[in-house]
Length: 178
Image (tube, rainbow, N blue to C red):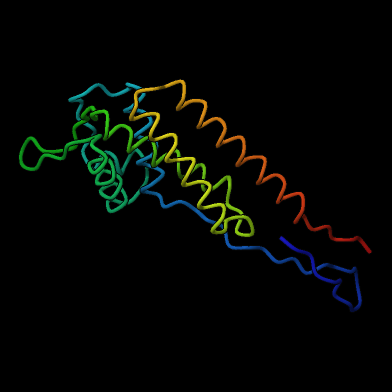
């Protein structure tokens, strides 16, 4: 948000305010995230039938299309099986070590991208440094060395956070009051 010079004229002086577009998540993503967390937390054991679409529409007050999209997201992530026919519906399934990791990483990456969105900071050097750090962490995981993976990831996260703070301090904008 930025403030522009005061608008002149009779009456109280006002500043024109500009807002930037907000990134609002899709309803299906919100529902899929909620169900994913509950499934992974163990609220719904494997094989549990989720309510039928009509009931999910009533419970969530979301459209049928939104419900279907959320269930498809969970199906792709291996968290539900969709059966068709008379005994059809969405059934909770426990994901394997890759499906679980994929689902976890997708959820985590959204949070990371949202909290570190700084267009003035991300450039080719940052991308290369990040890639090297991720490769080092991956090699430690492949070598089954959890201590090295933890150290490397911790170093990467702390270095990135320090760099973001440095850039944000350097590019902060102060608007003088008149």
